[in-house]
Every structure is written in C-alpha cells, then in structure tokens.
Length: 490
Image 1 (cartoon, rainbow, N blue to C red):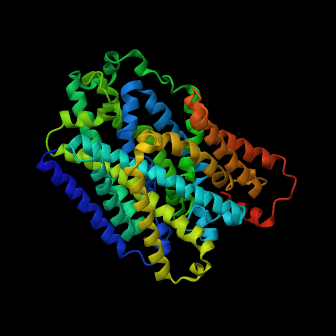
Image 2: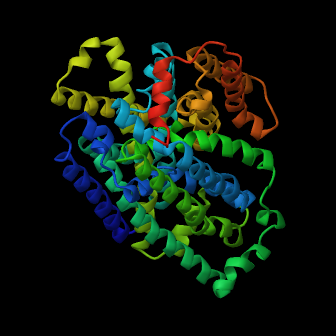
Image 3: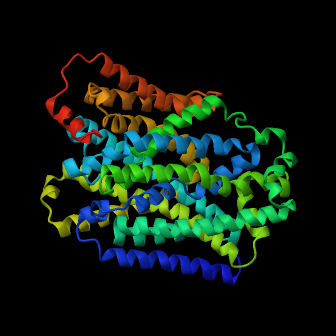
C-alpha cells in the first residue's frame, strides 16, 4: 500500500466515525439504540440485511475455496442464501416486525419468555451470546489477514484497528449508525467490486467473452456446480442452515426485520436482500474464480484475492478495495455487537439484576452502550487468539455454522403456528441435542463435511418437530394469541 491508499482508507474510517457522531444525536433511548425506533425504510433495511450477511471472511476463507474448487462456492453459499432469504421474506420476516409492534421487543430473544419460558429464553440468550463471540472474532481476524497481505501490518494490529473503529461508532450511534454505515459500505463495495471485475476482464485479454471463456483455462471441475467435498447434500444442508440464519437465527439479521416499520416493509426488505444475493456475488466472486489463471500453485489459497488486488490495481484503488473489505467486516461485526448487546441488556442482565427493569430511558441507554463496548472487546480478544479455534474458516464455518442451528430452530419455528405444540421442553431438548451432537462430531472424526456442519442442526430440527408431534397438551391461549397477531392475515 502506498500513501494514496492509506489516505483513501483513512477517509473511509473518518466517514464511519462521522456517521456514528450524526447517529448519536438521533438516539434518545434504548429503543432508538437497538431498533432505530422501528422506523427503518424497506430499502435501507434490505441493503443493511444484505451487507450484514457477509464479511471480510468472504475474501479470505471463501476466496481460498473459490481458488481450489471454483464455481461451487456461489452455488452452496450465495445461491442458497438467496433462496433462504426469499422464503424468509414470505414466512418469517413480517412476523419479526409484527412482534415488535405486538410485544414491544427490542432484542430477538425477548419474545422467547412469552413463547416458551424463562429457562428456554436464558439458555438461548446465553448460548447465542457466547457463540457470537467466536463468530465475530473470526470476522475480525479475517480482515486483519487481508490488511497484513496489503500493508505488511501485523495481524494483531489489524484486529485492534478494525475492532477499535467498530467499537467507537457502534457504541455511540447504535443501530442508526450501523444501518447508514451499511448503506455507505454497500456503495463502496459496489465501486470496488465493479473495478476489480473490470480489471480482471481486461487482464484476460478476451473482452467480455472472457467472462465465459475463462472457465476453459481452469481445471474442468472448477465449472461444476458441485465439487467434492461441496456436494449436493452439503448444499442442501447449507440451505437449511442459511434459512434459520438469514431469517433471524443470526440475531443481527433479525434486528433488520424487527426495526422495520411494518410486516409489509420487512417483507420487501427481505426480497431486496434476496435478489442482491442472487446477482451481486456473481460479480464479486468472479476475480476469485479467475485467480488460478494468474497465480498457479499458491501455497496459501486464502491469500489469493489479496494478492490479485495488490498486483493488478493502481495506487488509490488498492485502498478503495481494502476499504470495501473493511466495510463488509465492520458491517457485520458492528451489527453483531449491537444485537448481542440488546440480548444481554434486555434478557440476561435483568434476570440477574432485577432493578435494571426499572431503569429510566437514560440509564437504559447507558447500559446499552456499556454492554456493546464489553462485547466488542471480547470479540477483539477472541480474534487475536483465532488460531486456537481452527483459524478464520474454523471459527466461522466449523464453529458458528454448526452451532447456529440448535440455537436458531426454537427461535424461528417458534414464530409459526404450525409448531405451536413444540413447547419449552421441546426447545430445551432440541438445543441440548444439537449441542451434544456438535461435541460428538468434534470428538469423533467424520469424513463428510455435510454431516460435520449440518449434523447439529438436523438433530435439533428432528427433536423439536417430534416433541411437538407427540405433545398431547392443549396450546396455551397466550401462545394462540401471539401467533394470531403475528399471522400475515392480521
């Protein structure tokens, strides 16, 4: 990186902090801090949901998969996310917004007390908060790896830099700062992604025919939809996991729907996010697919995207691309911090310290900022020690994806009347069954990536379903009333 690149990156950081400062004056209470007062427009919510769905890990762990396995990455990642989010648009997203209007929730786990019981709520809240520390730490580590490739800065310095900027603007500005930064980051990402896309086409010397001819210059299996170990079964498993994740099992994505002004607004937001997942990754991932043409036999494929940017882009544009990578990561880590803070301050701490329930608006806002600060610091510490958890891919795929399902299933299916008979016992059994499966799969080696990643989710899903199927008790009236108010016909 040259001086011009650092200037571009510095301008980007100043933009983040400026938006955080602007948002500070819009935040008057915890509802503003966590849900933007329920005033998010559909286009802003949709773009924020999309941008919050992937981080710098795409340009590290996923870039490595694109280098070694090709187009299958789009099929099992972006395409399945697009399908999952489209399904969520019609069946789940509107219910989150109606839940805020009906029950006044500010965190995605707040309604679990009404839907199940206190034990279930606390189990999900505690488990999810701990899991998000690993997930968010992995994303911080990913962007630090890229900064190391570009500038030679140490991984620890990169983590501290990204984590500190994220910590400042999300702590002072809350969700308003988060979603407007998402929008700015989306514009930066579009500019940087299109620039990289065009540069690779020019380097291929085939004009726009190179978009299709490129695959003839790559190993034949790179153009396959499925490439071992990323099989059809693996893609189906990821589709199931992504449905529970992008419909709100990943808490920060639920917040985008909760903060929408109405069920119809949340639905439109999810449709927009889904369409972006179908289209934009084709352009974004293209340089990663082309990397083996220019750099053969890289010792570390996860560095492929960083190497291409450094080799092919002129001064200034390197800083722009790096800013877009920071944008992706900060979008996700900041929204994670905001949402997990909501869960901690709304659902965990009041159980331990009941006086918190009587806090005034100013005290609740101060608590929100303190919990956001503490969670962000924990993710920074985890990122610095990411090597102990299997690196970036290990943290985000092997840990978070595998653990997400057991936590998300009771949350998402609890919104649907079809699963009304699955009560608190079903939820707890489902979570414990999934977590036990995760531990067993870590202790005993399996040779199927689909089973390793999807096993905990599938076990949880089956337990939750069959507990409800064999439950002969009448559904409580308050649960019926909840589902009636969340139904799309009301």
